[in-house]
Image 1 (cartoon, each protein chain N blue to C red):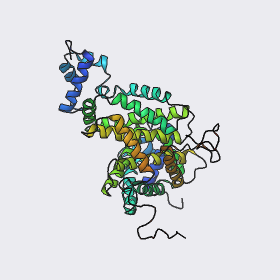
Image 2: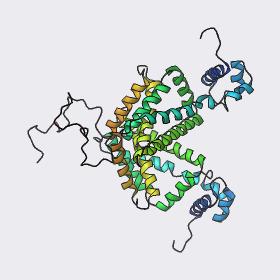
Image 3: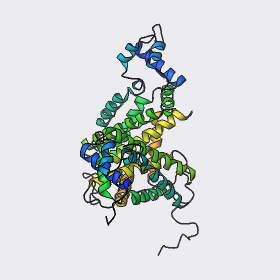
Image 4: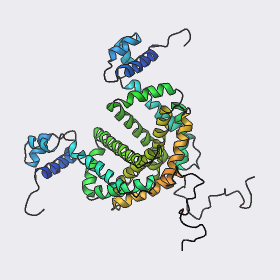
Length: 211
Length: 211
Protein backbone atom coordinates (compact mmCIF):
# COMPACT_ATOMS: atom_id res chain seq x y z
CA UNK A 1 0.00 0.00 0.00
CA UNK A 2 3.02 2.33 0.33
CA UNK A 3 3.39 5.20 2.78
CA UNK A 4 -0.03 6.81 2.43
CA UNK A 5 -3.35 5.44 3.55
CA UNK A 6 -5.90 5.41 0.77
CA UNK A 7 -8.35 8.34 0.93
CA UNK A 8 -11.81 8.40 2.50
CA UNK A 9 -13.48 6.87 -0.59
CA UNK A 10 -11.20 3.83 -0.57
CA UNK A 11 -11.48 3.39 3.20
CA UNK A 12 -15.29 3.66 3.08
CA UNK A 13 -15.48 1.11 0.29
CA UNK A 14 -13.23 -1.34 2.10
CA UNK A 15 -15.02 -0.83 5.44
CA UNK A 16 -18.43 -1.39 3.82
CA UNK A 17 -17.31 -4.58 2.04
CA UNK A 18 -15.81 -5.98 5.24
CA UNK A 19 -18.94 -5.26 7.26
CA UNK A 20 -21.28 -6.65 4.57
CA UNK A 21 -19.33 -9.91 4.72
CA UNK A 22 -19.05 -10.00 8.53
CA UNK A 23 -22.61 -8.97 9.48
CA UNK A 24 -24.57 -9.18 6.23
CA UNK A 25 -25.69 -6.29 4.07
CA UNK A 26 -29.03 -5.82 5.83
CA UNK A 27 -27.55 -5.68 9.31
CA UNK A 28 -24.84 -3.15 8.50
CA UNK A 29 -25.57 0.54 9.15
CA UNK A 30 -24.02 3.56 7.45
CA UNK A 31 -22.87 4.74 10.90
CA UNK A 32 -20.88 1.53 11.35
CA UNK A 33 -19.29 1.82 7.93
CA UNK A 34 -18.30 5.44 8.59
CA UNK A 35 -16.93 4.55 12.02
CA UNK A 36 -14.75 1.75 10.72
CA UNK A 37 -13.48 4.03 7.93
CA UNK A 38 -12.70 6.72 10.51
CA UNK A 39 -15.03 9.31 8.94
CA UNK A 40 -18.50 10.71 9.65
CA UNK A 41 -21.77 9.43 8.19
CA UNK A 42 -21.96 12.74 6.33
CA UNK A 43 -18.72 11.87 4.55
CA UNK A 44 -20.22 8.51 3.58
CA UNK A 45 -23.13 10.27 1.90
CA UNK A 46 -20.76 12.54 0.00
CA UNK A 47 -19.41 9.42 -1.71
CA UNK A 48 -22.43 7.11 -1.88
CA UNK A 49 -26.18 7.73 -2.10
CA UNK A 50 -26.86 4.66 0.07
CA UNK A 51 -25.40 1.34 1.27
CA UNK A 52 -26.31 -0.31 -2.00
CA UNK A 53 -24.30 2.09 -4.12
CA UNK A 54 -21.07 0.75 -2.62
CA UNK A 55 -21.83 -2.44 -4.55
CA UNK A 56 -23.40 -0.94 -7.68
CA UNK A 57 -21.53 2.32 -8.13
CA UNK A 58 -19.62 0.89 -11.11
CA UNK A 59 -22.74 0.26 -13.21
CA UNK A 60 -22.60 3.55 -15.10
CA UNK A 61 -18.95 2.99 -15.92
CA UNK A 62 -19.78 -0.50 -17.19
CA UNK A 63 -22.53 0.91 -19.42
CA UNK A 64 -20.15 3.51 -20.83
CA UNK A 65 -17.47 0.88 -21.49
CA UNK A 66 -20.03 -1.30 -23.26
CA UNK A 67 -20.95 1.53 -25.63
CA UNK A 68 -17.31 2.43 -26.23
CA UNK A 69 -16.36 -1.18 -27.02
CA UNK A 70 -19.31 -1.62 -29.36
CA UNK A 71 -18.05 1.40 -31.29
CA UNK A 72 -14.75 -0.40 -31.94
CA UNK A 73 -16.41 -3.39 -33.66
CA UNK A 74 -15.70 -3.39 -37.40
CA UNK A 75 -18.56 -2.46 -39.74
CA UNK A 76 -18.77 -5.94 -41.21
CA UNK A 77 -19.00 -7.71 -37.85
CA UNK A 78 -22.07 -9.87 -37.32
CA UNK A 79 -24.21 -8.96 -34.28
CA UNK A 80 -22.67 -11.77 -32.23
CA UNK A 81 -19.13 -10.86 -33.29
CA UNK A 82 -19.82 -7.32 -32.09
CA UNK A 83 -21.18 -8.70 -28.81
CA UNK A 84 -18.06 -10.86 -28.42
CA UNK A 85 -15.90 -7.72 -28.74
CA UNK A 86 -18.00 -6.05 -26.04
CA UNK A 87 -17.65 -9.10 -23.79
CA UNK A 88 -13.88 -9.02 -24.14
CA UNK A 89 -13.87 -5.36 -23.09
CA UNK A 90 -16.22 -6.02 -20.16
CA UNK A 91 -13.97 -8.89 -19.05
CA UNK A 92 -10.99 -6.54 -19.20
CA UNK A 93 -12.83 -4.11 -16.93
CA UNK A 94 -14.33 -6.60 -14.46
CA UNK A 95 -11.63 -9.22 -14.49
CA UNK A 96 -8.81 -7.42 -12.69
CA UNK A 97 -9.52 -8.34 -9.05
CA UNK A 98 -11.04 -11.75 -8.50
CA UNK A 99 -10.96 -11.51 -4.70
CA UNK A 100 -12.99 -8.31 -4.80
CA UNK A 101 -15.46 -9.81 -7.31
CA UNK A 102 -15.79 -12.96 -5.23
CA UNK A 103 -16.50 -10.98 -2.07
CA UNK A 104 -19.02 -8.75 -3.84
CA UNK A 105 -20.81 -11.76 -5.34
CA UNK A 106 -20.97 -13.54 -1.97
CA UNK A 107 -22.64 -10.44 -0.45
CA UNK A 108 -25.17 -10.24 -3.29
CA UNK A 109 -25.94 -13.96 -3.24
CA UNK A 110 -27.08 -13.71 0.39
CA UNK A 111 -29.56 -10.85 -0.06
CA UNK A 112 -32.75 -10.97 -2.13
CA UNK A 113 -32.89 -7.20 -2.64
CA UNK A 114 -29.31 -7.16 -3.96
CA UNK A 115 -29.96 -10.12 -6.24
CA UNK A 116 -32.89 -8.20 -7.70
CA UNK A 117 -30.73 -5.11 -8.11
CA UNK A 118 -28.14 -7.20 -9.97
CA UNK A 119 -30.87 -8.59 -12.26
CA UNK A 120 -32.03 -5.06 -13.03
CA UNK A 121 -28.46 -3.97 -13.73
CA UNK A 122 -28.01 -6.85 -16.17
CA UNK A 123 -31.32 -6.02 -17.82
CA UNK A 124 -30.20 -2.40 -18.31
CA UNK A 125 -26.94 -3.62 -19.83
CA UNK A 126 -28.86 -5.92 -22.18
CA UNK A 127 -31.15 -3.05 -23.20
CA UNK A 128 -28.21 -0.73 -23.84
CA UNK A 129 -26.41 -3.39 -25.88
CA UNK A 130 -29.52 -4.14 -27.97
CA UNK A 131 -29.98 -0.39 -28.55
CA UNK A 132 -26.36 -0.05 -29.61
CA UNK A 133 -26.76 -2.92 -32.05
CA UNK A 134 -29.90 -1.34 -33.53
CA UNK A 135 -27.93 1.89 -33.96
CA UNK A 136 -25.45 -0.17 -36.01
CA UNK A 137 -28.31 -1.24 -38.27
CA UNK A 138 -29.04 -4.66 -36.74
CA UNK A 139 -32.73 -5.50 -37.10
CA UNK A 140 -35.01 -6.96 -34.45
CA UNK A 141 -35.28 -9.59 -33.12
CA UNK A 142 -31.57 -10.18 -33.91
CA UNK A 143 -30.40 -7.16 -31.88
CA UNK A 144 -32.23 -8.25 -28.73
CA UNK A 145 -31.32 -11.91 -29.20
CA UNK A 146 -27.61 -11.14 -29.62
CA UNK A 147 -27.61 -8.72 -26.66
CA UNK A 148 -29.49 -11.10 -24.36
CA UNK A 149 -27.31 -14.02 -25.44
CA UNK A 150 -24.30 -11.86 -24.60
CA UNK A 151 -25.65 -11.20 -21.12
CA UNK A 152 -26.20 -14.92 -20.57
CA UNK A 153 -22.57 -15.51 -21.55
CA UNK A 154 -21.42 -12.71 -19.24
CA UNK A 155 -23.35 -14.13 -16.27
CA UNK A 156 -22.27 -17.73 -16.82
CA UNK A 157 -18.62 -16.84 -17.50
CA UNK A 158 -18.50 -14.46 -14.54
CA UNK A 159 -20.06 -17.02 -12.22
CA UNK A 160 -17.53 -19.65 -13.21
CA UNK A 161 -14.68 -17.17 -12.80
CA UNK A 162 -15.67 -16.27 -9.22
CA UNK A 163 -16.58 -19.83 -8.22
CA UNK A 164 -13.77 -21.94 -9.67
CA UNK A 165 -10.27 -22.02 -8.22
CA UNK A 166 -8.80 -22.84 -11.64
CA UNK A 167 -10.71 -20.19 -13.61
CA UNK A 168 -8.10 -17.47 -13.51
CA UNK A 169 -8.97 -15.47 -16.60
CA UNK A 170 -12.40 -13.84 -16.92
CA UNK A 171 -12.03 -13.20 -20.63
CA UNK A 172 -11.19 -16.85 -21.21
CA UNK A 173 -14.18 -17.96 -19.14
CA UNK A 174 -16.51 -15.72 -21.11
CA UNK A 175 -15.12 -16.99 -24.40
CA UNK A 176 -15.61 -20.58 -23.23
CA UNK A 177 -19.17 -19.74 -22.18
CA UNK A 178 -19.87 -18.24 -25.61
CA UNK A 179 -18.55 -21.37 -27.32
CA UNK A 180 -20.65 -23.53 -24.99
CA UNK A 181 -23.74 -21.41 -25.70
CA UNK A 182 -23.26 -21.84 -29.45
CA UNK A 183 -22.92 -25.58 -29.00
CA UNK A 184 -25.86 -25.81 -26.62
CA UNK A 185 -28.39 -23.87 -28.69
CA UNK A 186 -27.47 -25.71 -31.86
CA UNK A 187 -28.00 -29.03 -30.06
CA UNK A 188 -24.57 -30.57 -30.43
CA UNK A 189 -24.36 -32.63 -27.22
CA UNK A 190 -21.24 -31.28 -25.50
CA UNK A 191 -20.74 -34.39 -23.38
CA UNK A 192 -20.35 -36.75 -26.34
CA UNK A 193 -16.74 -37.69 -27.03
CA UNK A 194 -15.34 -37.22 -30.55
CA UNK A 195 -14.44 -40.92 -30.84
CA UNK A 196 -18.02 -42.01 -30.30
CA UNK A 197 -19.71 -42.04 -33.70
CA UNK A 198 -22.96 -40.12 -33.66
CA UNK A 199 -24.07 -40.40 -37.26
CA UNK A 200 -25.43 -43.94 -36.80
CA UNK A 201 -26.86 -45.95 -33.95
CA UNK A 202 -24.47 -48.55 -32.40
CA UNK A 203 -26.70 -51.45 -33.50
CA UNK A 204 -26.78 -50.28 -37.10
CA UNK A 205 -24.00 -51.60 -39.41
CA UNK A 206 -21.89 -48.87 -40.99
CA UNK A 207 -22.58 -50.15 -44.51
CA UNK A 208 -26.34 -50.09 -44.07
CA UNK A 209 -28.01 -47.12 -45.76
CA UNK A 210 -31.06 -45.67 -44.07
CA UNK A 211 -33.34 -46.53 -47.00
CA UNK B 1 -71.13 -14.68 -21.10
CA UNK B 2 -74.47 -16.54 -20.68
CA UNK B 3 -77.03 -15.94 -17.93
CA UNK B 4 -74.71 -15.70 -14.95
CA UNK B 5 -72.22 -13.00 -14.10
CA UNK B 6 -68.77 -14.38 -13.41
CA UNK B 7 -67.98 -14.75 -9.71
CA UNK B 8 -66.21 -12.31 -7.45
CA UNK B 9 -62.74 -13.54 -8.49
CA UNK B 10 -63.42 -12.91 -12.17
CA UNK B 11 -65.03 -9.54 -11.51
CA UNK B 12 -62.15 -8.45 -9.27
CA UNK B 13 -59.61 -9.47 -11.88
CA UNK B 14 -61.42 -7.63 -14.66
CA UNK B 15 -62.01 -4.53 -12.52
CA UNK B 16 -58.33 -4.40 -11.52
CA UNK B 17 -57.09 -4.76 -15.10
CA UNK B 18 -59.46 -2.03 -16.30
CA UNK B 19 -58.37 0.37 -13.57
CA UNK B 20 -54.65 -0.36 -14.07
CA UNK B 21 -55.06 0.60 -17.72
CA UNK B 22 -57.28 3.63 -17.06
CA UNK B 23 -55.40 5.17 -14.12
CA UNK B 24 -52.09 3.32 -13.98
CA UNK B 25 -51.11 0.60 -11.53
CA UNK B 26 -49.65 2.98 -8.95
CA UNK B 27 -52.69 5.23 -8.83
CA UNK B 28 -55.26 2.47 -8.41
CA UNK B 29 -56.37 1.53 -4.89
CA UNK B 30 -57.73 -1.78 -3.67
CA UNK B 31 -60.87 0.08 -2.51
CA UNK B 32 -61.48 1.24 -6.08
CA UNK B 33 -61.00 -2.24 -7.49
CA UNK B 34 -63.39 -3.71 -4.94
CA UNK B 35 -65.96 -0.98 -5.58
CA UNK B 36 -65.93 -1.52 -9.32
CA UNK B 37 -66.24 -5.27 -8.82
CA UNK B 38 -69.17 -4.70 -6.44
CA UNK B 39 -67.48 -6.37 -3.47
CA UNK B 40 -65.69 -5.22 -0.32
CA UNK B 41 -61.94 -4.68 0.05
CA UNK B 42 -61.99 -7.66 2.41
CA UNK B 43 -63.22 -9.84 -0.44
CA UNK B 44 -60.34 -8.55 -2.60
CA UNK B 45 -57.84 -9.73 0.01
CA UNK B 46 -59.48 -13.15 0.15
CA UNK B 47 -58.48 -13.57 -3.49
CA UNK B 48 -55.24 -11.57 -3.80
CA UNK B 49 -52.46 -10.73 -1.33
CA UNK B 50 -52.01 -7.31 -2.95
CA UNK B 51 -52.58 -5.32 -6.15
CA UNK B 52 -49.55 -6.89 -7.76
CA UNK B 53 -50.82 -10.43 -7.37
CA UNK B 54 -53.62 -9.72 -9.85
CA UNK B 55 -50.87 -9.56 -12.48
CA UNK B 56 -48.52 -12.24 -11.14
CA UNK B 57 -50.88 -14.78 -9.59
CA UNK B 58 -50.23 -17.21 -12.46
CA UNK B 59 -46.49 -17.53 -11.80
CA UNK B 60 -46.76 -20.64 -9.64
CA UNK B 61 -48.92 -22.33 -12.24
CA UNK B 62 -46.37 -21.45 -14.92
CA UNK B 63 -43.55 -22.95 -12.82
CA UNK B 64 -45.56 -26.14 -12.32
CA UNK B 65 -46.34 -26.41 -16.04
CA UNK B 66 -42.67 -25.92 -16.86
CA UNK B 67 -41.69 -28.85 -14.62
CA UNK B 68 -44.47 -31.03 -15.97
CA UNK B 69 -43.52 -30.33 -19.60
CA UNK B 70 -39.84 -30.98 -18.93
CA UNK B 71 -40.84 -34.40 -17.60
CA UNK B 72 -42.40 -35.25 -20.97
CA UNK B 73 -39.13 -34.67 -22.91
CA UNK B 74 -37.68 -37.97 -24.17
CA UNK B 75 -34.57 -39.30 -22.41
CA UNK B 76 -32.37 -38.80 -25.47
CA UNK B 77 -33.39 -35.17 -26.00
CA UNK B 78 -30.54 -32.64 -26.00
CA UNK B 79 -30.86 -29.84 -23.42
CA UNK B 80 -32.14 -27.42 -26.04
CA UNK B 81 -34.62 -29.95 -27.44
CA UNK B 82 -35.98 -30.38 -23.92
CA UNK B 83 -36.19 -26.58 -23.54
CA UNK B 84 -38.05 -26.37 -26.88
CA UNK B 85 -40.63 -28.84 -25.55
CA UNK B 86 -41.06 -26.68 -22.44
CA UNK B 87 -41.45 -23.55 -24.58
CA UNK B 88 -44.19 -25.21 -26.62
CA UNK B 89 -46.06 -26.05 -23.40
CA UNK B 90 -45.58 -22.55 -21.99
CA UNK B 91 -46.89 -21.10 -25.26
CA UNK B 92 -49.92 -23.35 -25.00
CA UNK B 93 -50.58 -21.99 -21.50
CA UNK B 94 -49.87 -18.30 -22.15
CA UNK B 95 -51.01 -18.07 -25.74
CA UNK B 96 -54.78 -18.42 -25.37
CA UNK B 97 -55.85 -14.80 -24.88
CA UNK B 98 -53.77 -12.23 -26.70
CA UNK B 99 -55.95 -9.28 -25.69
CA UNK B 100 -55.45 -10.13 -22.03
CA UNK B 101 -51.70 -10.59 -22.50
CA UNK B 102 -51.43 -7.34 -24.40
CA UNK B 103 -53.26 -5.45 -21.69
CA UNK B 104 -51.18 -7.04 -18.92
CA UNK B 105 -47.95 -6.22 -20.77
CA UNK B 106 -48.98 -2.60 -21.34
CA UNK B 107 -49.60 -2.22 -17.58
CA UNK B 108 -46.22 -3.75 -16.72
CA UNK B 109 -44.31 -1.70 -19.31
CA UNK B 110 -45.45 1.53 -17.68
CA UNK B 111 -44.34 0.72 -14.12
CA UNK B 112 -40.75 0.21 -13.00
CA UNK B 113 -41.70 -1.92 -9.99
CA UNK B 114 -43.77 -4.26 -12.16
CA UNK B 115 -41.00 -4.52 -14.76
CA UNK B 116 -38.65 -5.56 -11.96
CA UNK B 117 -41.19 -8.10 -10.70
CA UNK B 118 -41.44 -9.54 -14.22
CA UNK B 119 -37.63 -9.80 -14.41
CA UNK B 120 -37.58 -11.65 -11.11
CA UNK B 121 -40.33 -13.98 -12.28
CA UNK B 122 -38.35 -14.79 -15.44
CA UNK B 123 -35.22 -15.36 -13.38
CA UNK B 124 -37.10 -17.82 -11.16
CA UNK B 125 -38.37 -19.65 -14.24
CA UNK B 126 -34.82 -19.81 -15.64
CA UNK B 127 -33.53 -21.16 -12.32
CA UNK B 128 -36.26 -23.80 -12.16
CA UNK B 129 -35.61 -24.84 -15.75
CA UNK B 130 -31.85 -25.10 -15.19
CA UNK B 131 -32.50 -27.15 -12.03
CA UNK B 132 -34.84 -29.44 -13.94
CA UNK B 133 -32.21 -29.95 -16.64
CA UNK B 134 -29.57 -30.79 -14.02
CA UNK B 135 -31.99 -33.34 -12.55
CA UNK B 136 -32.07 -34.90 -16.02
CA UNK B 137 -28.28 -35.24 -15.90
CA UNK B 138 -27.34 -32.16 -17.91
CA UNK B 139 -24.01 -30.75 -16.72
CA UNK B 140 -23.16 -27.11 -16.05
CA UNK B 141 -22.77 -24.72 -17.75
CA UNK B 142 -24.97 -26.39 -20.39
CA UNK B 143 -28.01 -26.56 -18.08
CA UNK B 144 -27.90 -22.85 -17.25
CA UNK B 145 -27.06 -21.85 -20.82
CA UNK B 146 -29.96 -23.85 -22.28
CA UNK B 147 -32.39 -22.58 -19.63
CA UNK B 148 -31.35 -18.94 -20.00
CA UNK B 149 -31.42 -19.21 -23.79
CA UNK B 150 -34.94 -20.61 -23.46
CA UNK B 151 -36.00 -17.62 -21.38
CA UNK B 152 -34.55 -15.23 -23.99
CA UNK B 153 -36.61 -17.04 -26.63
CA UNK B 154 -39.72 -16.86 -24.44
CA UNK B 155 -39.33 -13.11 -23.87
CA UNK B 156 -38.59 -12.26 -27.49
CA UNK B 157 -41.34 -14.52 -28.88
CA UNK B 158 -43.86 -13.27 -26.32
CA UNK B 159 -43.00 -9.63 -27.02
CA UNK B 160 -43.48 -10.10 -30.75
CA UNK B 161 -46.76 -11.91 -30.17
CA UNK B 162 -48.23 -9.08 -28.07
CA UNK B 163 -46.80 -6.28 -30.25
CA UNK B 164 -47.45 -7.47 -33.81
CA UNK B 165 -50.87 -7.50 -35.40
CA UNK B 166 -49.87 -10.40 -37.64
CA UNK B 167 -48.29 -12.58 -34.92
CA UNK B 168 -51.31 -14.67 -34.10
CA UNK B 169 -49.70 -17.82 -32.71
CA UNK B 170 -47.47 -17.61 -29.63
CA UNK B 171 -46.01 -21.06 -30.18
CA UNK B 172 -45.06 -20.13 -33.74
CA UNK B 173 -43.47 -16.87 -32.56
CA UNK B 174 -41.42 -18.70 -29.95
CA UNK B 175 -40.28 -21.28 -32.49
CA UNK B 176 -39.27 -18.48 -34.87
CA UNK B 177 -37.39 -16.77 -32.04
CA UNK B 178 -35.54 -20.01 -31.25
CA UNK B 179 -34.54 -20.41 -34.88
CA UNK B 180 -33.42 -16.76 -34.97
CA UNK B 181 -31.40 -17.25 -31.76
CA UNK B 182 -29.61 -20.26 -33.25
CA UNK B 183 -28.79 -18.27 -36.37
CA UNK B 184 -27.73 -15.19 -34.41
CA UNK B 185 -25.38 -16.88 -31.95
CA UNK B 186 -23.71 -18.94 -34.65
CA UNK B 187 -23.03 -15.76 -36.62
CA UNK B 188 -24.86 -16.55 -39.84
CA UNK B 189 -25.88 -13.04 -40.88
CA UNK B 190 -29.66 -13.23 -41.23
CA UNK B 191 -29.74 -10.35 -43.69
CA UNK B 192 -27.31 -11.93 -46.17
CA UNK B 193 -29.03 -13.51 -49.13
CA UNK B 194 -28.21 -17.14 -50.04
CA UNK B 195 -26.95 -16.10 -53.50
CA UNK B 196 -24.24 -13.91 -52.02
CA UNK B 197 -21.16 -16.06 -51.49
CA UNK B 198 -19.76 -15.70 -47.99
CA UNK B 199 -16.91 -18.21 -47.98
CA UNK B 200 -14.48 -15.88 -49.74
CA UNK B 201 -13.98 -12.14 -49.98
CA UNK B 202 -15.27 -10.52 -53.21
CA UNK B 203 -11.78 -9.40 -54.21
CA UNK B 204 -10.28 -12.85 -53.74
CA UNK B 205 -10.35 -15.22 -56.74
CA UNK B 206 -12.11 -18.51 -56.04
CA UNK B 207 -9.07 -20.54 -57.13
CA UNK B 208 -6.69 -18.74 -54.80
CA UNK B 209 -5.83 -20.75 -51.66
CA UNK B 210 -5.25 -18.82 -48.45
CA UNK B 211 -1.58 -19.87 -48.18
